[in-house]
Image (cartoon, rainbow, N blue to C red; front, side):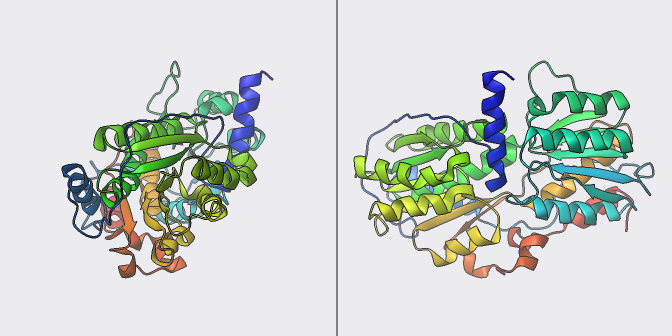
Length: 392
């Protein structure tokens, strides 16, 4: 095993703590510092007004159903099984994807078999090898980098089993086809991190000094983190951005990393964890630094515990969610098209939503609403997909 693969393996194992993959360290800064103000009040700068307007747009609930494409023949998947292999089933939103995949597949008379990737390459390989032996109608993987299970993925390709690699970018040099495709999460992820940044820009009147905690292992997660940095630079030229890489495999180190950064630079007024995977650790670091009253936080996530904190924690400005139930239905649509001999769409409409102090009280903060996707607004996309599939 070479050194680079060993590093990837360690960082993938850490994803059992949440959606992201993380490793490495990165530090950068840009802009100049300034005082903060309340985004719920009047934004005085043009930068803050633009951020507030964008945030308000992203905070609106989905209304109706988007245009989801052309009808597809699902007869070839009826009565068959689709494999679902999440990177780590207990992490983040994957249980809700699983539940909604089962609901979507049932619409066309198909069954779901879930195999937990367990957050490590051996788990990925075991699940995909199981699929090679059982020859399901299709396989969906979720946030598993191709590079960490390339041999197993290629076995499936050779066996003629359609494979949809969701939550992952296509690596350079890896061929795709109508039966072997990637579901790049870039549109969803970029939309979410812009929302978490807008909350900070608006609240600070365009003068935030931010500690950004970045994830650096998966190519998709790296792209989202870099987009956050670029967005802050572009949308808030008078913000200061200090970037710290984190290793979720050693979660206990994150509070000390945050507290030491805040003590070292007392001008920092905001902490932005790229995802809510390590929100609790970041909050602990803020508390250890004695900055609970002065630091504000913004992040991305879509699980009940995180969204509840938008309501209960005065520090937390916003939580940008990516609608796991909807993502599940797009995955089902993709594999139905692949089984029918069609290439899946490169992307689907983004139905994200940012949860803020202004809209969180309107949400039904229950596990049922979390699993059903009602926080994001209309679930009319379910019937819209069913209509495309000639399903009930």
